[in-house]
Length: 234
Image 1 (cartoon, one colour):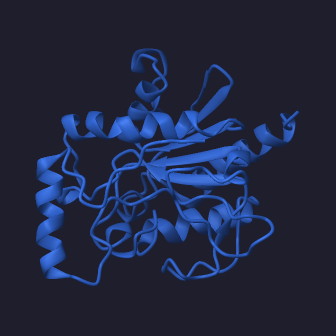
Image 2: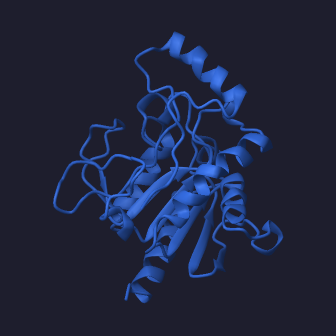
Image 3: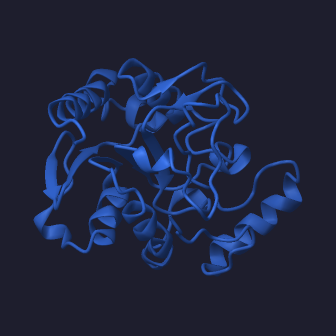
């Protein structure tokens, strides 16, 4: 299964490209490039799968896709793995483990023992944006990578969108109007054979301000697990 991936020096979004160039100078040991998707692990191999331009056969069995906004400057932009290196990953990966979508130890680095079970994670915008705020044009541009990634998972049944921007970009990537599939924490909507679950983003800001509690976040994934259990693959 072929799908496009941004090159390490992707320049489709000049502002993001220039921002990354600055941080390559500041922190040359960091990833500082578009962050690839985090893919399920080959059940015959305990090593973490890496993202390539060809989806491995075991990846095609992914039933759940989590879509975030963009890499954090000192999180995924530093480590090269979505939600790895900042607080959002602590909450996300502990929740995934509790509901059977991940296993191993999350130690906030890409070479830890954390692996995904029939679950993949990707950001709507692959490059880190200044102040964690991509522009509308940048979100739209990066959709050329998001759309084929979603459609390249033939056994996908559920998507969790983290935050309004990720949700809206996902709806548009699926060719649907946002007005018919509005964002709301805990909301669910169907597009074709996919069930879309939306959640507030698991950022430290949202949890510190009480916008999102751990119980609220866990409830979303409890609903996802129930949905997948009630709709086994044929």
